[in-house]
Length: 131
Image (cartoon, rainbow, N blue to C red; front, top):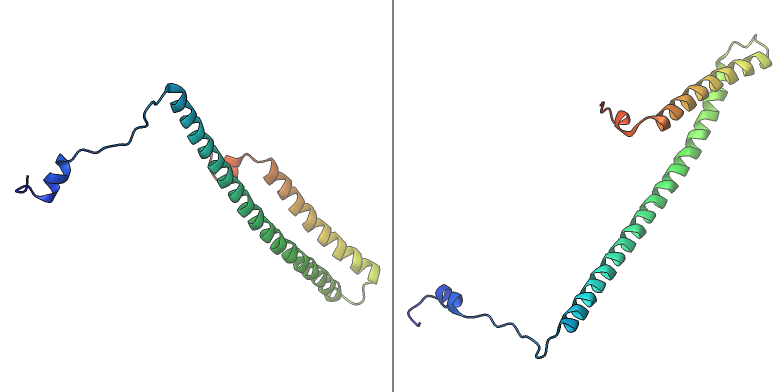
């Protein structure tokens, strides 16, 4: 056996696995149940960690969305004011306000209709996939 290379020596060695004396079916089932319980506990912990991570990510996104919405609202107010100021000065203020309100309302109605349409659309048509 000394003449064999190390690879051949490893192939010829027997692997011994320790086996408990008096192993019973009940013991094997208990061991299997314990192992399954451990796997389930690990999976539950993994899901908990994923949920925590997702919640944190969503909360950060909501903060950004809320901040951006406030800034967009301020921008809209400034644009409406600019639209009012851009209208001819010989028009009465009430007429200028009505023109600005009508334009803003029309834009809002179009955006709301688009949003409702998107919410009712099937997921496949949203991504441009047709059946």
